[in-house]
Length: 75
Image 1 (cartoon, rainbow, N blue to C red):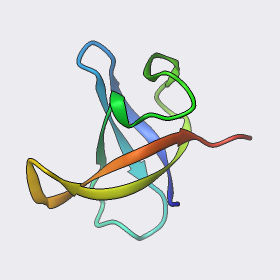
Image 2: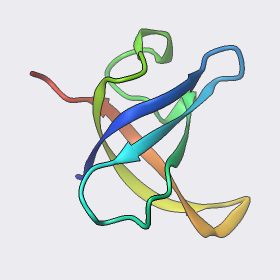
Image 3: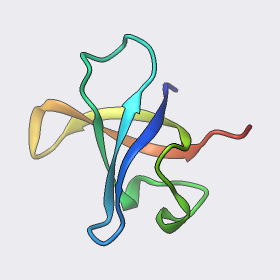
Image 4: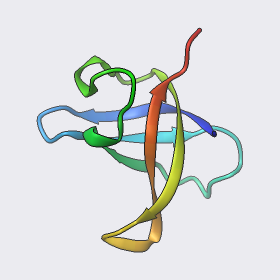
């Protein structure tokens, strides 16, 4: 599972963006929906936290990826 940092949270809209670590991306941030969060609630997430996630094609635009199975990384 790749890791990344929560870059943006839009709590009122129920989504956010993750900045993936490493060079596995082209500099694109990954969208994630509140329903993709596991083990904690979406409201517990904060910008700057480290998370792990899986990627899958975004059904709205299959050329883009989105993050699913988003979990906080334990320190």
